[in-house]
Length: 316
Image (cartoon, rainbow, N blue to C red; front, top):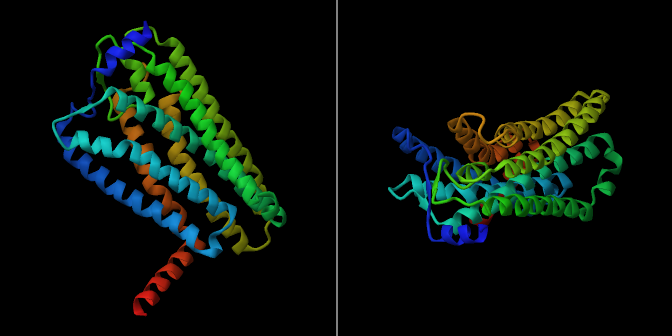
């Protein structure tokens, strides 16, 4: 029965409603999306290039920061171009296959970022609490294994959640009250009882959000104890700046995610859910590079060295 409904759905496009109730917001929203997407591309590509080209940014911290920047590039590219296409013209449609592909990828990348932020907190714990053994414990092999684990956990969750959602019959309902294809919105489109899907989504979200978040809180509890024991004011300030940047990123990403995924789908105003979704899939990837670089002397020095190298090359 579900296969029959899926085959019927393949022939129909999904209509993305977005903020159709507020047409005056379209132009400002397009401007915000274009601006934020440009800054996201520039900021995250800059961090990736700096981490790869500067020999002084080859520590595990910058390996994970590079992974986060690459993840943010993929994350925002999954949704923003489609949103701009729909907002910029009369066509608000997306093909059924395109919608499902977007849901699979978006869920995969979002879950991966949740786990990766927890791993980055673990890296900061080792760096601050075990500085003499840091390079031995967090060697390149372990960093690569941890990064791959984050991607695999995200993929496994996406395959489970998205596959359960795709099998839900729509019964001719092709209108999605959202900017793009995300699981909570797709579940609401179904014409059958979705209790199993909602419970599964809530349980997995609790595990994938609260698990890494608990690891982050525990890690920073130990980090706070270690920081207060550092005799040098400069040492304490450096540790605080590095860790506070990560905590800001965690707050920006986890806050909206907890609201959207850890409650039943019928609860909460849909417009607020849309705004929060835009926040963590558009604003947060744009803000991450600036949060990490504005308070990080190493990255700013690496940028100066790269600019001087470019100027020297031009002079030659």
